[in-house]
Image (cartoon, rainbow, N blue to C red):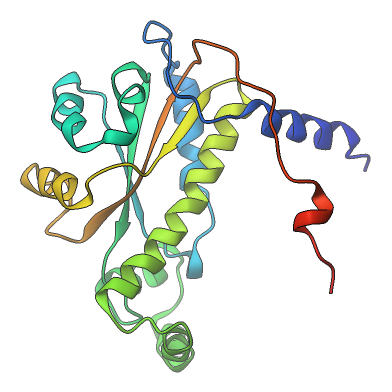
Length: 219
């Protein structure tokens, strides 16, 4: 199978993508295109297939206004983006948590007796990664949300939609806001990262990266 065309198309996608600082507020992403972007997030890989994320799509102008004082990194993106997504990470995802058991047995359809036999391996995995505190567990889930984030931004660029990942926010303040609105599901989630989608108002500068030999080493 000749993959030359596919490789060229993918490289064009990566070269097209850039961190868009301001979007055209009049140019909205179609429902079909945005569902495609969300689907690539849903299909993203996660450790153990546990999907430790939730995507909150902030479309209400009122909600965006409430977010604005706490999101300094999105001063231009928040009011102009066609779609603005808050990606949450699941907290306390231990190897014997009810969510993990439900995910493995109901969603991934692993027989319960098989899961029980795998418990020692799961426990060893958690020990090896030092997943022995609430902070460590949250960091682990949050790292996985970035897989979905990257896939969504790449998928968006592939269909000509721009994006910008955002980490410039007051974590505690935004979590408090989400908690008051019942969006953290009894404190089961915490904000991980945000991402804005829309269409650029100006062309991006040429992409600049270190040469491949500077960043790749074969051993």
